[in-house]
Amino acid sequence: MTEQKVRWGILATGGMAATFTADLVDMPDAEVVAVASRSVESAKTFADRFGIPRAYGDWEALAADDGLDVVYVATPHSAHRAAAGMMLEAGQHVLCEKPFTLNAREAAELVTLARDGGRFLMEAMWMYCHPMVRRLKALVADGAIGEVRHVQADFGLSGPFPATHRLRDPALGGGALLDLGVYPVSFAHLLLGEPSDVVARAMLSEEGVDLQTGALLSWENGALASVHCSIVGGTATSASVTGSEGRIDIPDGFFFPERFVLHRDGRDAEEFAADPAHGPRASLRHEAAEVMRALRAGETESPVVPLDGTLAVMRTLDAIRDRVGVRYPGEEAGGPAVTPA
Image 1 (spheres, rainbow, N blue to C red):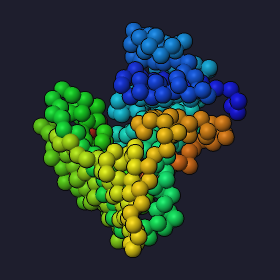
Image 2 (cartoon, rainbow, N blue to C red):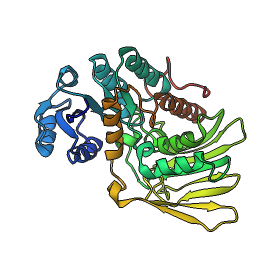
Image 3 (cartoon, helix red, strand yellow):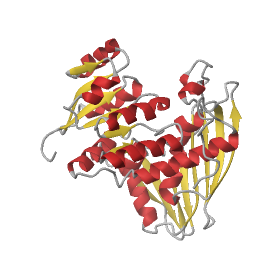
Image 4 (tube, rainbow, N blue to C red):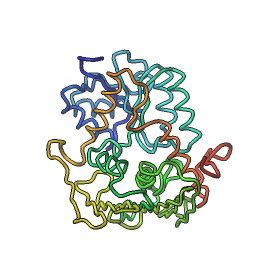
């Protein structure tokens, strides 16, 4: 897979699948060749929209398609374990949307399937692949602000969302944390790794999902992270990273920043802006490019979005849910972990 186009299959036909596919069809080294949905009508409508030659009305047909190089799973996250698992068991490589699964147990099962079968698997954490986020991480790693002391990040939507909305449905893994909070938690992990302790509070809905959640993550070296997510109040989606010798501020859209500002003790502030050559700031092409790079290199895991990192994030999300009392149907026999590893 060094010269030819990478052939993609798309599993699901919702908004996220459409956004990703729209970016894929504009990439010269990618080709979308198949799409599957629970409904053949939905699959055909999606296929017609994007010029996709094969449309399937069930997941099994996509899993059995031997003309694919990788499958993008964009079902609701409550179905990620089943959908990605089916693809991996059929021998397909997989890019799976975030949150990776409902809980760390399901995530570990997918990782085991991929590693045992020698299949590529990556969480679609596009933030990690964004050029500006990668630049920020490199600056921190190079010591631009000294030792990281504190990370702050928030992501909230104003709503209101009715009780019938997927974000309020426990059966679909509803709530602010998994849908939005995965971003600030993943941002903290990117810079500090897995926390040693978690404290969290939340406002819960009548259905038992979190409407807003705040968490304080701590590390053994004394570093802290303050993360917040909400579906009842729009936030600035800002982030900051404070170190022993300076600070980096992302004023808005921290998971796909257009710019950030580096403040170093005794120096003038320095602004870093996105390179227009990288395309629209909201583009998902960077994560698609990382998948295709890894496949061409024969890699089964991405060093940019490593599976061990995905598992660590899922353990932290489990710990937060345990602290605030959110548990989804069917988790009683093996749901959220009580503490992070």
